[in-house]
Amino acid sequence: MEGYFVGWGTLALINAGLAQGKNRSGLGWFLLSLLLGPIATFLIVVLGKNQAYRE
Image 1 (cartoon, rainbow, N blue to C red):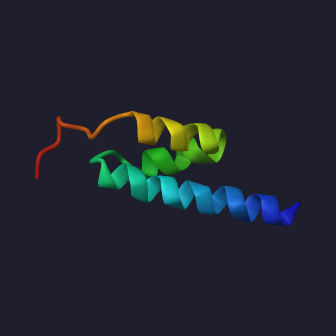
Image 2: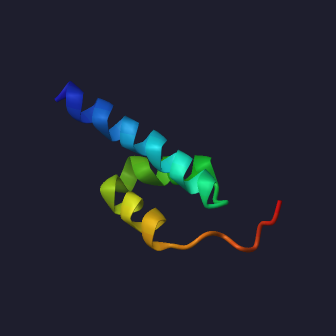
Image 3: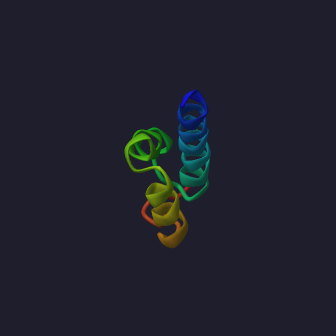
């Protein structure tokens, strides 16, 4: 059971990195990923880059 939590947390960290790469809130997606897991990964991949934020 412990491995399940480690994997879920790792996925949340990966999702935060993916979200930041698409100009989205890493912290927000990290927290959402803790709740939704793989569904959040799917949403990050399907949603395009956030164009509202420009560097």
